[in-house]
Image (cartoon, rainbow, N blue to C red; front, side):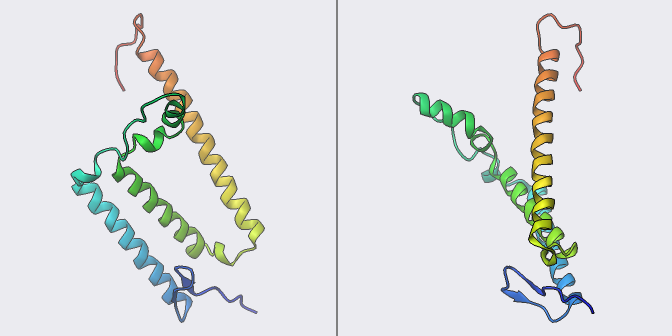
Length: 148
């Protein structure tokens, strides 16, 4: 007996009659999101090229805010848009094309949390190694003078 797939996207707001229609609908959605990313990447609107917020000024709480919110404070709006659109694409690819929506909740959690922890670990390694490389190449008595 064949397993019936969920034929709706956008939290049930758009329903399809068959699996083929749903695949084409998701493909069109992903194509539109990709086209928006490409257009924004080519034109880079000046209004989106400035950081969203400035530094917090003040006492201890402002310093803590600067430390914990620095990825957001110094991030350009265009970068945030790219990150959000990439997450949207990853969600629809996984949930619809890989049929993760039709799996049990425990398998979905296992896949998602594994990816989240792996990404956090990779970001940690990149930041640690990047700091080390920066320190090695930018000390006053270094023998290495080339950039990469």
